[in-house]
Each structure stands twice: as structure tokens, then as C-alpha cells.
Image (tube, rainbow, N blue to C red; front, side, top):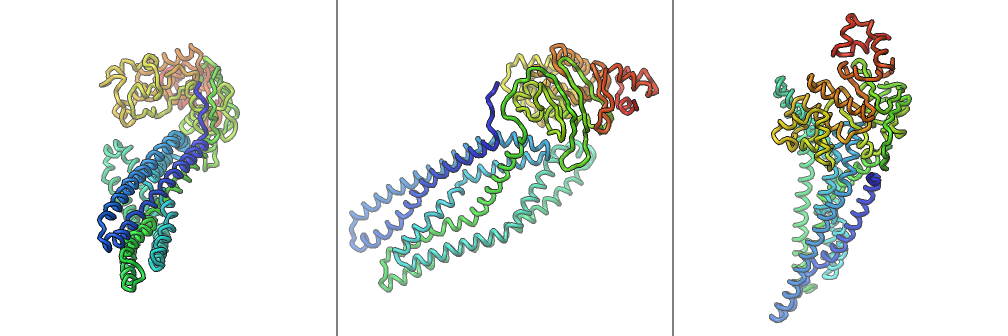
Length: 582
């Protein structure tokens, strides 16, 4: 049994602690790195004041050698700091990657697929923020007083010019944030909407092309793209204008330093060497404030991304246990189950109760919209019940730890849901599995020979969820995945909707084999070919169980309402039977 996995909130806190430790080490390196930036201006002063005036070449050689060594040390520290950020970004992303992915998938079940894409995008942006070195901006700003003190020691006027420049650039950064915040927010929202629309169009490319919808869809997309680009350009226009002003201001301040220095030299207040030294130091003082114009937005985006990631991790796996629990007996108990979707007030299921024992097969039938697929999803713990519960071997199927639950349960949804990857990986549920077990599941589902006819057999890669396969092939591969590992509970939602006679025969044989080894089986179906093997039937109508009992008794009760009794025994759909009044 695998060990208990950490809570998502614990993973987030551990990642943030590691981030702060790494940032602290990088800040210490950055402190020494910034101090070494004084080497060049101090070297310039000494050249003007000691070498040029005395024509002492020995001093020139000594000073150059010293500054050369300092520059090498500075380059080494600069590389070390950038390396710390790169490694730190990778470690933080590695710590958060799996919990974020799990939480995104869980949240997607309740709030849609866009959540997962947004979460992974936030994680990518947070990683890029750390790796880019923008996180070092506060450290660089913190060293600014040191450079201002050095400027002041050269002459108070130099210090005043540097301080005024820092304040003006800070004000520019604040102005950019105030003026560009709303356009940037609109641009991000518009870009996100276009991205979702693009993904939807690509996902439904077959229907769009076949029904001649492409020109209309492309026109709609172009209009949305144009609106998004307009919002982006408006936001960027303000930011670019102020950024250009900031660059101009920095150059103007350096000119002011040179002008002030020339005046001070003429009046005999400072030596000529201070002019270049003060210009270099002033540029160093203003550099982090100029970076603040771009870094401010990066920091705000990073804070927003981490806040969303933290909320996702706290919300995504809410109510799930992290401790693996072995399922010993596949006894399924549905106890007064009621489910109301989030944001709605009408229940899809109301007060559903029944029991499924090991070795028993129960069929669930009913008209469209009766809540059958919702019931199947609740049984496998995809959604949290509003009231009541579903229990497998005494444990809530929703709260059950997902890894150990998956080892005991096989689920076949209406949409087969194959993933991009090799055939053998899909059947093995992307676990490290023995090939013999994979082949056994394929044989049980009757797809071993079909797989053998694929270009590379079990190594065939399925792109776009197996889009190049027929609906029946995808459904049979998904059945093999559900049967993999001999699960103790099988939940199949319309497992024969795309199957031919051969596929249905393989399905029925697989269900009989599973029942023979003691598995509990729940089947949602509309075709009697599979329901004729059920021990009991449950009739759902408008989310309520209207009848449950022995298969023969239920069919005998409902059959007289049909015009043709013989149709009950054929492979015809059972929707009409479910519509009949008991």
C-alpha cells in the first residue's frame, strides 16, 4: 500500500518555505554582488587622481590587476545568483506540479476544463518569475542607500541628484500601475476568452468542417481576437509611453550628474575623477528603479498567481482523504443519496438508496435526463453528495483516497476518455505495470486481436485521445482499462453504446468473468443485451428510484405496458420500458 500523500496545502507551504530559503541565499549573494559594482567607479577615481596626475604606471598596473580580479569575482557571483534562481524555480515547480495538477483535475469536475489550463498557466508564470531573477528586485532596491551614501560622500550634490532620480522613477512606476491596471485586466480576460474559444474550435474541428461552420466560426474568432488585441494595445500603449519617459529621465539624470560634476570641478570642490565615478554610481542607483517599472507588474502577477494556486490547492481536494485504504469487500451501499449541482436549486437525484453485493450485477435504466450518468459519477466519487452518501466497503467513495480507490474500481464513462499516449499506457492507467497484466485486460475486453492490427500494436501512440479510432474501438480500449487489475467494483455507463455484436459479446463475457471472481458490477445501459444478465434492475425517473427489484420481476411488471411483448426480450432500447408506469 503506498504511503500517505501530503496535503496540497502542506505542499504549498513547503514550496513557499523553500522559496524563501533560496531567495535568502540569493539575496546574500546579491549583497556582495552589488557591493562589487563600486569597484569600477572607485577604480576610475584612482586613475584620474593618482595615475594621470603622477604618471605612475606601476600604480596603474596594480589597480588594473585588482579591479580585474574583482570583475572576475563579480561575474562568478552573478552566475551563482542566476543559477540559484534557476534551480529554485525548478524545485518549487516540482513541489507544486503534482498537487496543482491533482487539484486542477478535481476542481475541473465541478467548475469546467478552463480551471485546469488556468492553474497550469499560473504555475508556469510563477516558475518563470522566479527563474527570470525578477524576485531579486527587492534586494537590489535594498542596496540603493549604500550607493546614495557613496554619492553623498563624493559630494552632497551628487547624492541629491541620485535621490531625486530614484523618487521620480518610483513615481513613474506607480503611475504606470494606476493607469495600466484596468486595461491590462481587460486584456488578460479577453486573451483568456480567445484562448478558450480557440481550444473549443480545435476540439470540435470535425463537426465544424463537416457542416460548413468554419467561415462563421473563423469570423467570430477573428472579431474576438481583434477585441483582445485592442485591449492589449491600449494597456501596452500607456505602459510603453511611461517606460520611454523613464528611460529618458535616467539619461537626463546622468547628464545632470556630469554637468554638476563639471561645475564642482571648475569651482575646485571635487576632483575630476568623481565625475565619471558619480555618473556610473548614479546609473547603478537608478537601474533597479527603472527595472521596478516592469518588475512591479511581474511581482503583482506573481502574487496573483500564487494566491490562485493556494486557493486551488485548498479547494481542489476538499473532503478527500490522503491516507490509502484497502478495499477488502466490494459491498456498495447507496444511502439516501441526494445531489444538487453547484449554483442550482433543483436536485438531479433525490433520496436514492440501494445495496450492491459482491458477485452481483445491477442495471440502472431510465429515460434521458433521469440522472443515470450523474448517479454513476457519484458512485465513483467524482462529485460530493449534497445529502446522504455512497459507501464502498464502509468508506465514502467521494472521500476515499484516489490511488487506493482506483486500484479497487474500474470505471467506463460515456465518453471513453482515452489520453494521449501509447495503447499499453492507456490500458494500464499510466501506471508501471507488467505487460502480462496489460495483455490479460485486453484479452478480457476482447481487444487483443484488434490492438494487434494497429500500426505498432500495444506501442501505438494515441493522439487526440484516439481520435483516429472508431467509436467502438475507443470504447473497447476504455473497457480494457476499466478491467485492468481485476477491480472489485465495476461501474459502466452505456458500455455498449458504440459496440457491434462482436463487441457486445466480448463485453458480456468480461462481465460474467468479473462476476465469477466476486466483483460487484453496476451498469447504466439502454440496450437489453447487457441488462438481460443483470441480477436486479433499478428504474430512475427524474432523479427518483421508482422501482428496484429482481430483473425478471421488474421486466414482468413493466412489459404489459408495451405494445409488443416480444420486444422486451430483444436487443431493443429500454427507454420506453423506463417510461412505463409501474
